[in-house]
Image (cartoon, rainbow, N blue to C red; front, side):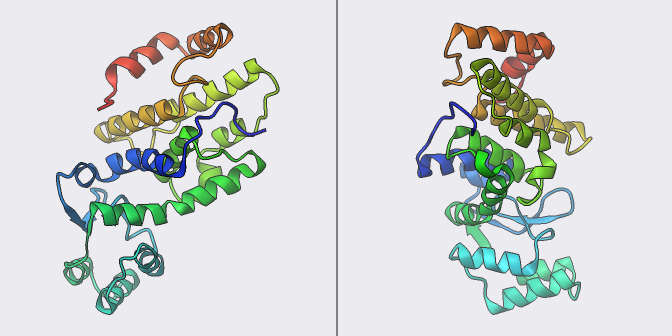
Length: 257
């Protein structure tokens, strides 16, 4: 049985929610209008990206060309050639950036690119969960935002194996369903935040994980327990997980803005 008590959304609302954290974390300046267009830039780790996290270095030339084409932003022949040459090592980064100086995307265009690119993660999650796939919901949006940051869509089973196993647990009673949701929430918030040992970057990533965990929701009904039984279970769950520390960090220290 799929995850119970999910917050079902229509497609447009779902896409907005799914994309919100991705946009904020991958290119907040573009998302907030601080800049009106974006060109290929170094992401700070030595990789070139454009828009909302599309990694030119990690993806193949054909994948990048197809992405732009499918988003309705076709590259010129010269831009395609320069990209292919850069990816093959025929030209260096500086020459590639010079050839791509005219390739810019607005926020709307970057959103179109994201909506095409993220289908890899949507398909990957559906394949990983099989019959237990999560329907269009806040919970699914949290999974997609989280895994978009962790690697390829095809790598979802390897990147979040515990969460996949928890969704597929199929509890048969309310206590089991409470535990399933709480354990998934915990995994998102605390067990997928170690991509880097750089404290500044890690703190930012932890903030992202807390926001994704909030989107998933610890409780089965709009950020509050449905029953006294659920409230008691969650209290006991957090106590087992060193709840005083958890609640202090979750509600007082992280950046929700």
